[in-house]
Length: 234
Image 1 (tube, rainbow, N blue to C red):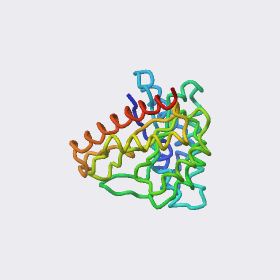
Image 2: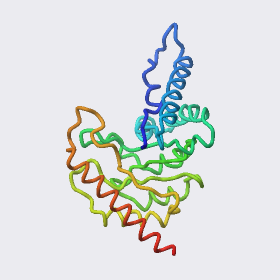
Image 3: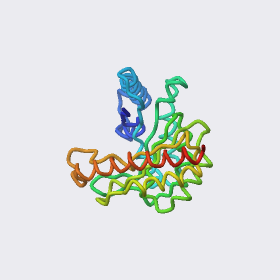
Image 4: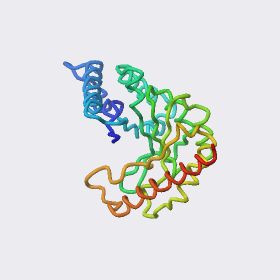
């Protein structure tokens, strides 16, 4: 089972810009990192196969600050957390990024991946979960991944769009993965959904029935791609 946790970069925004007289920003960040580390270690000790940081604010940060300074601040903070884990532990850690997906809407899909991916891959994790199905220029995204992916990093591409009720077919998903295998080594390629289904209790824009049909299609399509890629390499 993969379990997601909120990245400390998102929670860091809770500290007021004007500061607090008896509680410095640095002390707040240190406490935040301590609690984030505690959460991740608890999940790993409980048997989680992977633990991923939800980092949806990564792309949004570039919309709010096109200079990239805010994104760098986020990356530095998240890496401070990841530095607390060994290289072996970080192989079980990951990061998820997307342009948002609540109530069938996004907050930053107008920010191109070319501004984010070169920096996102600086995070010290072994797994990257990337929204992909909803991207308009997929070949450009795959080329960016090919160029900037760390040699031992796994990339899980989103192959189902959670913002539409249209059910992808296993064959469509298979074809996406077969194309991706031209850019990402097969042993480091996986599939996921672009975003969680109804991540908050008040979001009922995607029905449970549709969500499970999409998940089923992803599993079947991934198995189909696996079989064809295995034959390709025999």
